[in-house]
Length: 159
Image (cartoon, rainbow, N blue to C red; front, side):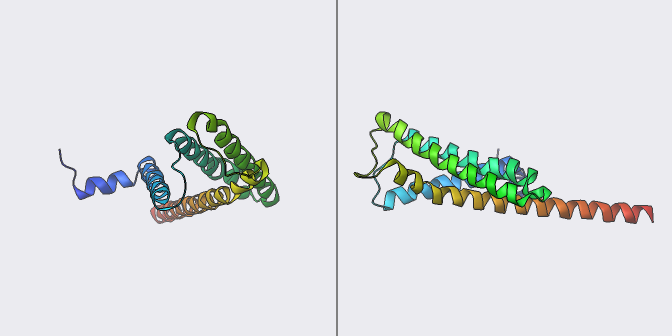
């Protein structure tokens, strides 16, 4: 069975398919980074566990924090919750990497303290908070446009 171009377009309109493609693209980017950088090759367990942690932060922000707090005008509460999520993410990432170290053989660079390893997780957390904000804002804008179009169609129908 061969898929035509219209079948691919229809599949890409489904949010789940789009999410899988985006996360696979991110995973490919990460793997290429490991290939061409001077990093030690991490174990697959650690890589998958970190991807799951990244996805948890992304969806917690875009599906819980942003709609329930920022979407309702509670910006200060959102900022505090986002900072708490970021701190929790960095701590979980640190614990995850240190906890998996005995199974994977990975060790932090010599002389790196727990605090330095925790701080090293902050930029990655900011990246996923930023990306999830963009995702939420785009989804919110598309939803608002659809609602506006439906209201205009309803007004035209009643005229």
